[in-house]
Image (cartoon, rainbow, N blue to C red; front, side):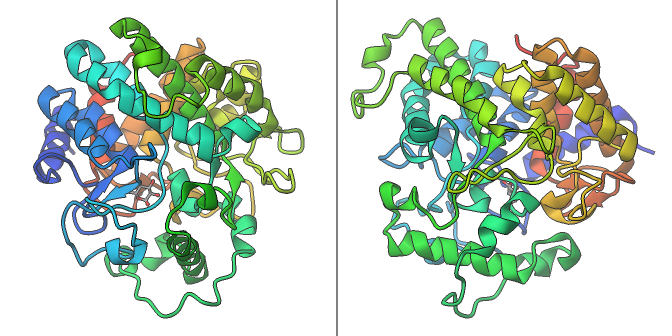
Length: 428
Ligand code: GLC
């Protein structure tokens, strides 16, 4: 049985082993490149014992930012055959090669967490963060709807959540052609998405390629869903960015002259705050994703249903806490990625049930900042127990705590380091 001190040294060696110079891969083999939100959570872990690497990790991601402001979900810094779909399939024509979609914008919130250690480096990132947030505003629904939309399940970071089943089912995958998956060579197929989902993931990539990854065209992807997790994460990131701009004493108007036609940060924040209630589903008694084309909500709650407090929205705090407590009574560990009582719940299959420590981290941060500290602590303790039970897996079965997916996972190690060293969660 490992002690907490053993686990802490294992977590550090996982990060060291998964480093490829200036960035850290999520895990060896299965994910051999730089992933957007993985890297930002990993920076939080690095900050616990190697501040220099934390800043380098963040800066490296922004080296791959597109001129439009988009920060891609994967940066292919090297060539590797163990991953599909690689740069040739994405065909974005960028240097460095990248995917053509984004991922949850946690960067500004991570920068705020560590800004005091190197304020100059934080200040240099501000224009990049501002440009990325404006890109979400313009091209991912915020200006139009007051909520953030995704154009591919992978953009959500929660790849095969049951919420995406229905909107994905109408995507035409008849022209996808033959291809060979690599993920199921490395992880048991029973834990990974089905082939029919993969066909549609690729059809959406091909849609981007056919439209030369134009932001305007891609915003109208055949798959378009309003996501409460991205919206909460973006709203928190916008308020953290506003705080950083203030703290740095920079003149907002001169932060970035490249696209000042967009709305200022205060308007963007207000738009998101006003829009969030659209996620509330009276049928599910939870915040749920919805299809902006039909207005229909997904049928059941997900771990994202607990993220409103993270965005500073506490008008339904008691309902959020009640949902968490109900799940606590139904599963051995929290927080399951999907409603455990629903027919689509699968304890071992990717985002259809398993627990992800990075999601636990943002949920707990939010609850603590809204004074629901007991609930936040319950999540933190359950997360640490998962690592004590099974080690540093990609995710965990919520019923028995067994590890799911890849082993020696960077972001799981990072959250352990963050939470074992800094038990206090909440806004600083
Ligand atoms: C999977 C996850 C995604 C993550 C990536 C690398 O695709 O769904 O959230 O960023 O793996 O860990």
